[in-house]
Length: 403
Image (cartoon, rainbow, N blue to C red):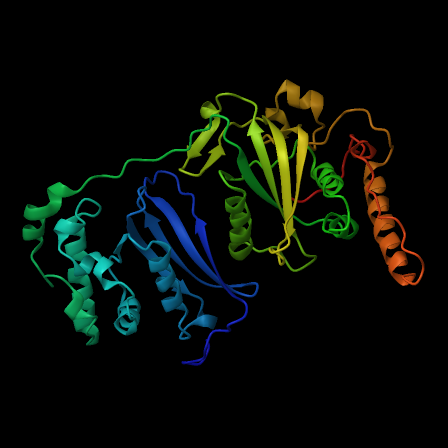
């Protein structure tokens, strides 16, 4: 644990607002994540009302290595800033939480439901629940000898019966908001650990972006689009999903990994029978078999360099598929097009596609290095990547990939 009063580093501290997908919840699950360099430093979990005008705080957690350095206040301030007009319900606090709250300076106490009469916010929160939470917090403050910003709290300790009689009838349960799938482009992310030469090639901005995207899709396999991905309405939301997965479930130490986002249009219409759960901005699929899709765009970036994003469009779109749970659950059309590992069965112009991709990547990188060493010579014409047709369309059985 850091010494009390030690400041957080000004460089490397990042805040990320993410969507936590949880089934059965009408309110939208959100999370503010703080990271320092590659390490997760803390997070704030909360629910957001579908109309965006009310917030329920669930948990505020700071990693022991970053406690007593002001990070909890940074996260709570960010919550208020992210939802500048919403009512904030902090609920009840633990003993440790009460001691922290006693020293926290709330940026907008007038939006804290504990500080305002229920008539103003009772349509969002149960007046009885809020009153009981206030009573519990009052008990914690008395137990620890804390003030707890008592002067801001409205009707401190009012009887629950009074709250129920006056305001409980005003409560209005939230109505779910679901995405409409009709022709909605979807964006899903995967995390990859690429072979060194392929990694260097697809992240080389001097090479043609379309050729690099083609190589990346060939390496993954057209029939291997991630089954467990959340498919979002925006590309940025998909990248955030991958970043959050890095923070909570990091890869073991090793080569740098790549976040890839597929932008696709489902070919089945409607897809609603396959939807496991639909939120306002994302869906998942529960169909155990494959799902045919058209990949319209590919975007990718190195996980530790999110400011350098590569992107390429496919025109026409590339036929692909979300992978089935197992080869036994694949459709006849999928088995005819893809082998058991998800790679195309079409005739291949090269016997060893993996070797071709590896060799081409190494050759391109070596050529660039050689040109740099002979910079005194007249400039060579710009390098032109191999056309799309160069990339073989068949993957030899047994080639590994990481998604």
